[in-house]
Length: 65
Image 1 (tube, one colour):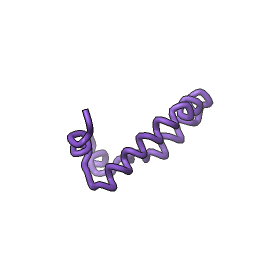
Image 2: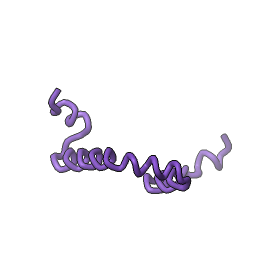
Image 3: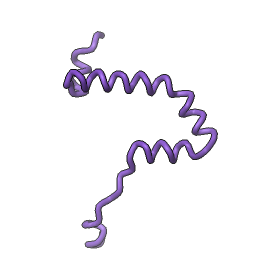
């Protein structure tokens, strides 16, 4: 590793950048659209957890078996 490599910040793509790259191809775009209902449930669960101020660990320990 060179000195330049160790001091240059690495770009970590945002979720939107990853999603847009994934959806660039028709087949991948369709797969993403097919999974939209599952993504909605995940977003709902994240929002619910954040409203309560819980960490992911707390969510798991407070979930029903």
